[in-house]
Image (cartoon, rainbow, N blue to C red):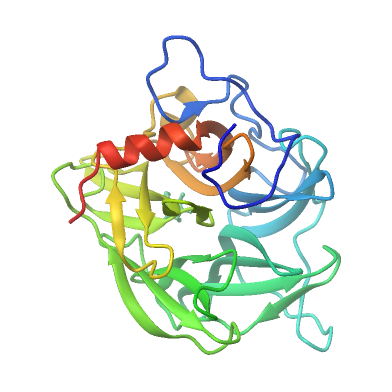
Length: 330
Ligand code: BMA
């Protein structure tokens, strides 16, 4: 048992115990990848996607590269969180009057339930990459909301509850291309429309090189007794391009702009063939977690090589102890 996570029970969380002899705090699912090439007729690759528990089963917002190469968002369902029934068509976004309001492209969704509404945040086209926001209550009608920020910005991640009475979002201001820089910022809103009080949270750099180029928030942060647990991606630049790894941080529960601890080393980096080989090699891009609070089990979903969806697991007490004992805040 664990009393570290402040949240719900999920007794049917997809789970696999850590293999004997494994020294990692985040260990991969032996059945990876869970989504492979050409998973549905209208998509070549589904990755960097987000899942949530729902009424004893699971729902997901999926980044899908269509067969013209353009990224968009699909909705999917699963009985077990591993085998997914996605599509068949992209999410049909509407405006507040129910009129079609399609997106031009969409990628890297995060999915969160706040009170009784489900929100999707993604990278949207607003005459340049910016953050898109939409909501649904029934997974049938998906409403687009105003873009929280102007271009260029990516990696929008909402908090699962208000903090000090305000909605909170992470973002990563960027440029119009494959941004060679990037730090995580936090902003707040009374209504999910007007955003302000922007603050710097954390940036690239440190003694290691794995996060030397840029960092971006990953899954929705998890509320724990030690603070907000944030998985994030860190990027290094090699002569063959970017390498995307995963790190983790603990942020102050009442002021999440304050970083208390942050992993000096990555906790997951591209090693397996489905991470090192694919449409974009050497990418492990975290977008979602689900957890079972009573046992402290965390199941982690990440995109691999911009081609596959993969899973990994962590035990929260072990992970938090690791972050605290192997921290470098800069
Ligand atoms: C980022 C995003 C991600 C992608 C990554 C690696 O800029 O586009 O969707 O996984 O690059 O290509």
